[in-house]
Length: 336
Image (spheres, rainbow, N blue to C red):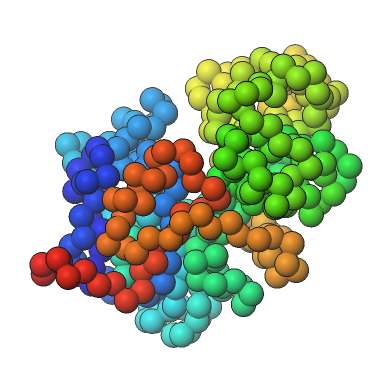
C-alpha cells in the first residue's frame, strides 16, 4: 500500500510517499481502507516535535530518539470502510463505513490501517449516514474534544460562553454545540475567520489581533481556550461567579495555577484531556444526525500533497478542517 512516511523530525519535506506493507488485523482488530483523513495543528506539532516542553522528551523516547522509528506514519483521525476483521471481532463486518481515532498508534496517512475495536486510546464507530467520509474524518479531534470541553464546563441554556481559537477544528464544533445547548456564544479568532464563525452560529465575534477579550469588561459563565494563549489571570477575572475556565492546551504553570484557583476562589479551572467516552460519542452523533452541526472544511488535499497540507495548516489560517482524500491514490512520480 502507499503511505506518507514520516522520515525525520522537522519540516513537512520529511513526509514522503512510499510503498509499505499492508497490515493484517489481529484477532481483535479490523482493517480499514481509508477514504479520508485530516491534518491538524497537533499533527504538525508531533511531526517536528514543537510540543509543550513537558511532552518533548516523552514523545521522542516513544517515537524514536534521532528519528521516528516506532511510529513512521502520522495521522490521528480517519474515515473509511472495513475490509477485513479479526476472528474475535463481532461489532463490525466487511463493508461497514466507520470513522476512527488512532490514538498514539497514528497511521491515518495511508491507504489502509488496522485498529482494535475496543481500546481506551482509540475509537472506531459507525459513520453517520448523513456525513461524507471527509466530514466524518473530522469527528474525533474537533467533535470529540469540543463535546468533552463543553460537557466538563456543564454549559446551561442562557449562559454566556466564549471560545478562544474558535476558528479551528475544535472551535467550529464547539460554537455549534454550545448554540445547540442554548448558550450565547462569543467566538475569538483572526479577522479572516470571523464571517465563517458567524455562519456557524456565533452570536458575537472578536478579532484577537485588534482586541483582547480579557480587557473588554465582559463577564462570561464559561471560557474555553482552545489555543492556550490567553492571559490566565485576566481570563479568570472575566468569569462570572461560579464560572468555568477550560484549558484546552494547558502549560505546566497553568496546571499549577488552576489548582490554586480552584482551591481559593469560586471559579473552576479544568484541564482534563478528552477521552472517547461512549456517552460523549452518542451525544455528539445525536446533534450531527439532527442536522445541528455543519462541518467546516477549508481545503482538501490528495494524499500525495501531504507536505503542502502541513505547510498550510502551519500558517494558522485554517478555517475549520483540512481534509486529506486517500481514495484512488495516484502519483506519476512515485517509484515503487
